[in-house]
Image 1 (cartoon, rainbow, N blue to C red):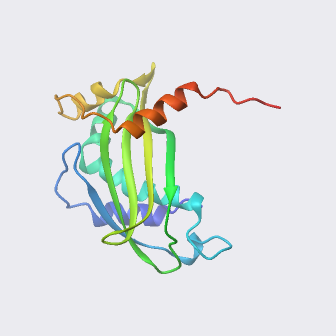
Image 2 (cartoon, rainbow, N blue to C red):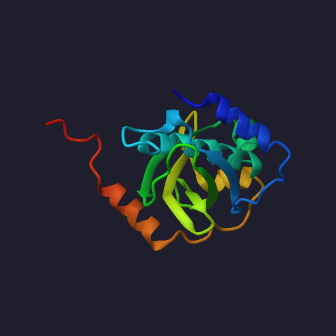
Length: 178
C-alpha cells in the first residue's frame, strides 16, 4: 500500500522550507517502519523505490517543478530507474534521503537520490529518469526548465548516466514474449 500519510507528512514538514534552485539538494529525514520490511527483516527493495517518492516530490515542489507542470497541464512520470543497494536498513533505523536534479537530455530529466544511515554511510543510490508528459507526448526537458525560470544550459550528465541511457536505447521494446 502506498504510504499516503507519510507522503503528506513530508509535504507538511517541508511546507515552509525555502525554495531550491534547479540543481540544489533536498534533504529529508525518515524512519524504517516494520511494515517496510521484507522476510529478511530489512527495508524491502520495492518499498525503497516507493520511499524515494517521499523525497522526490517535495524536491519537485521546492524547486518549482510541480507549479510549472500544473500551470501547463502537464504530468510527471518515471521512465526508468537504476539503483544500487549497499547497506541494510532495518526496522526503526533512521536515515536521510538526498535528492537532486543532475540534468537532462532531449527527452528525460535525471534525478539522483540516495539513502544515508550516517553522514558517510550510503545504503542505496538511485537515478531516475523522469518524463514530463503533455497531450502530445513527452515535453522537452529544456521547455520544462524554462517554465521553471531556468534559462541556462543543463550541466553535463555524468558518463555513467550517459552509458545507462545508451544501453536503455538499445534495449528492445516491447520485451520478447517467449
